Length: 225
Image 1: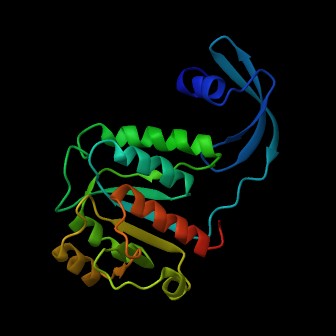
Image 2 (image 1 turned 30 degrees about the horizontal axis):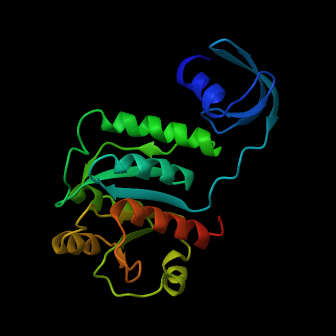
């Protein structure tokens, strides 16, 4: 291999000739391989097949309202580390900036791939093209539960509320508003489509923080942290 993968192995991960690494193919199969590094080329010789990491019991889809600047890069990287299955960038009433401009989606896909490699994840989350809020609401029926953190939701500790919301649930979506949050009309649209609003406490979290907090809590609630 050459290019980005070779540079990541040698410069970022500091792998050396003869080191053993784990490789994953598109089907999720896992292998141990020994590296042969010469100049800018890296070869991997398969040594043995190994057991692939277990798949998370709770499939999480993060629908993230597009934030300003480079914040979405951070969300994609950290959501990948938390095992999110798919990330849906959202264009909402209060979306600002150029988060949905052409080329961004491919960048996020590259970042997700790099983050998956860094954290030892066997699969890369799917990154969808930006989607309008109304289109996302129309897809809520695909999930067994849709959670929408909202600063005006009734403050109820998630420790007591989540067990009831997640009983029997294997596929959950988390929808996060952009800077400024969701409008009242958007919340009404979401709840009419079957979503449940939740509170993240008395502090208002930034958009790039809120979704990651919820994903971490869900992983913990599922016994996977």
